Image 1 (cartoon, one colour):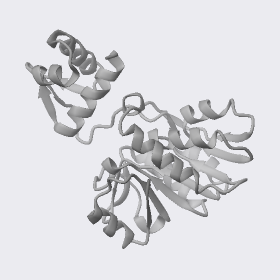
Image 2 (cartoon, rainbow, N blue to C red):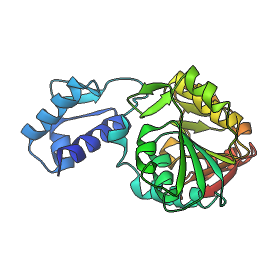
Image 3 (cartoon, rainbow, N blue to C red):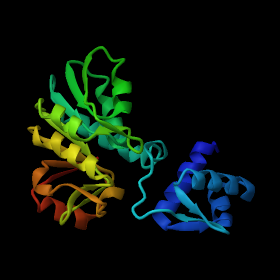
Image 4 (cartoon, rainbow, N blue to C red):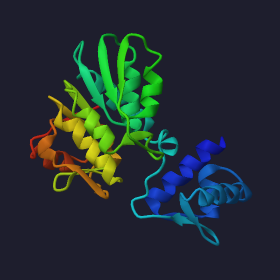
Length: 252
C-alpha cells in the first residue's frame, strides 16, 4: 500500500473512531508497527492528528481533512452522485460550482459535454476544466483555502454577484433538517451563500457521511435548497426529515 493511501486510511479512521493504537493501525493497514509509527509522526508534524505514546488521537473537533486526504473516501458513492447530479444540467446551462471532492467528480463528468459554462471558485476544478475547449470556464478569485482548494471571501462574493446560474452545486461538510447546511470555515460558508443567491436551482451534493452532521459555520437553511443528491445509504429517518423541509432527495 502506498504511503498516500495509508495516511488517508489513518486519517479516516481517526476522524470516525477518535483514535487508535499502533497495533490496531498495523492490523488495519497490513504493515509493520514501525511503518505505522513513521506515518503517525508525519501526520502529527502536519497537524492532522495528535501523536500519543501508544498511537494517535483526533487533533481537533470536527477535523477538516485536506482535500488531498479526502479524495479517496466514499469514492464509488461520489461517482454515482456525480453522474446523477450532472444529469440535472441542461444543455447550454450556466453552472455554479463550489469545491470539494464530490463537486470535483461532477466537474469530471461535465467535462465530457460541450456548450456548458462553469463558474467555480475551486482551483483544482478549474485546472481540470481549463484544458477542455468545449467548456466555457470562469474562475472566481479570492483568498485561497489550502484545505479545500477554494478561493473565498469578499472578493469572491463581489465577483459572484455579477453572474446568474441556471444551477449551482454546493458541497457541504454537514447537513441536518434542523441546522441546514454547514461547513468548517465561516468565510467559505459566506461564499457558498453567494453561489446560492444567484442560482435558479440550488443543489447540495453530499454522501451519506455528511448527513446528520453539524459543523462550525452555517451555509443556509434547507428551505433555500431545491435538491439533495446523495447515495443509497442515506438513513430513512434523515431522508424523511429533509424531505419535510421541502427538499427533493435524489439517491444515486
